[in-house]
Image (spheres, rainbow, N blue to C red):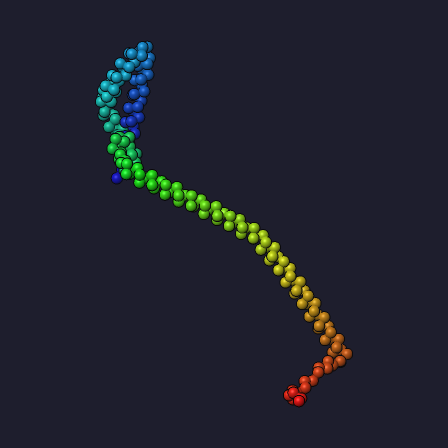
Length: 180
């Protein structure tokens, strides 16, 4: 549920108050007279607002259509009803504040350690990229060398076949067992 806030009425009341203050300051030169008239000012304001009530109620209706304040918002008229904290309430609040401070410090330390760890991994990332580059280079060299060896071997085989040279493989000698 929303509470209607009488914004227009407050504005009119404030304007009347300021207007009367200015009139008093212009009409009277002595401080004593200003204080005396300032005391009577509240009665004059009430009288003016009473004569304007029919207009102010229309402003209130207009305000209620346009403006509303949720229940959880503390309005100036509710300030007198604010809860007074007991000593125990204040101790509980202080304890909660201390717990939150401790938790904040722990989180700050955790964040700092995570940043340090992240920096360590960032430094390793460059080393890892260099290592991967070196491995790729080595793979290319080995592949190139493997291709060269394969080409030389194929060329040697072709040469040997072209000469019709047979490669004599040693014959296996059957194992007859040990000679004693």
